[in-house]
Image (cartoon, rainbow, N blue to C red):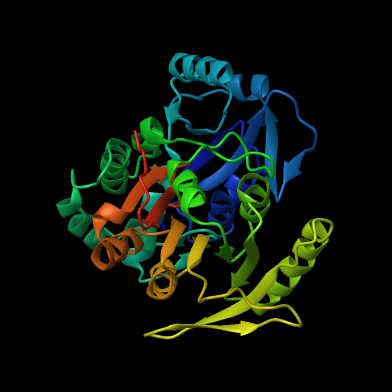
Length: 355
């Protein structure tokens, strides 16, 4: 059996939420790479989860460093430029994170295995059949950014290189209750909807509800959180009640259950459930079966604005098969398989100005 090739991580923020996928992969004995060290200029500890830390000077002073595999995770532009020069000067081999995941997916597919890595599942996140079927939608999106993003996503699926997405990533400055990206769809929704539900349906809660309270609280909306995990709903409901109680807002809560044909919601504790029959809904969806949830909401909503996290190519293909492409738009807010956010906008008599 061949030994897995060694890999050094340059400037990796191991504790960042964006590191979850890679951390989960490294814990799997089937992962076809071996983590040798995390390289930083300054070390605050000797190792993290058994992966040694190494100072930059020590790493660069290693003998026979040429062709050493390195994954460059430095975010600062100046430091990245410095490291790119070092990589060239020392003959290091730069590995793309998407290349790692694509190779890992192919390895699992050959063995008929599946791995859940938090926000993505492999090998489904690199579904070659869905990728081929998606080709027919090239150039058909209703706005230039969506067409550009879609083309870059197809290139990423084909090559596995996260660099293919770099030109289309429109990353939010931060996820914070007082920051929300300017969104023409949200502005159009706000212009026509004076009441309804602002609702997050997700495995774990983001800052979406807090952001909506700050940016879209126009008096007539209720706020809700739902999940397919009752435990998650209870925990997040307690936090939401604490956060929003001072504003006089009582969050609605429910646990969801999906079958082949429908989605059902149940009450959690004494809290009211989000009003599925509300005419106006602004929803964030980040679950394993997003298309089933979107269909459920679409069936009973007059004005629906949904931000849908896509975890695999088949999710996007299902959306394109279920809804008119004129109601959809696409953006990439993070590099990688789980970076796509689909906007579904069914807004009656609203004009959306998408540049």
